[in-house]
Image 1 (spheres, rainbow, N blue to C red):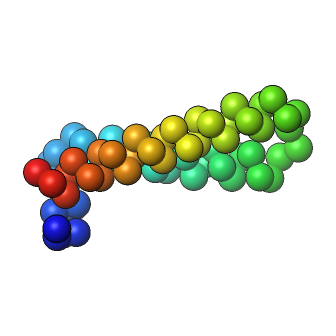
Image 2 (cartoon, helix red, strand yellow; image 1 turned 60 degrees about the horizontal axis):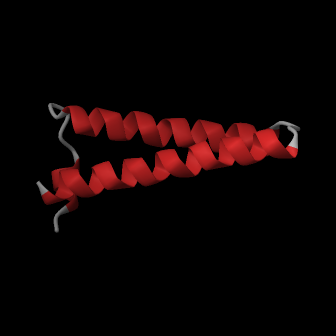
Length: 65
């Protein structure tokens, strides 16, 4: 498995992976730096983890293709 296969700027999956990973990082930063209620923190954390899992899946598809 070559990680150089990950960088495919002409493939839309690459850009979707980049956006999802950036979004999960932003959501994690918001959850950690702002004082939020427990419910809102849990929802933000779930979205961040979901985005990270989906981004990892897209990364796996890019490497395998």
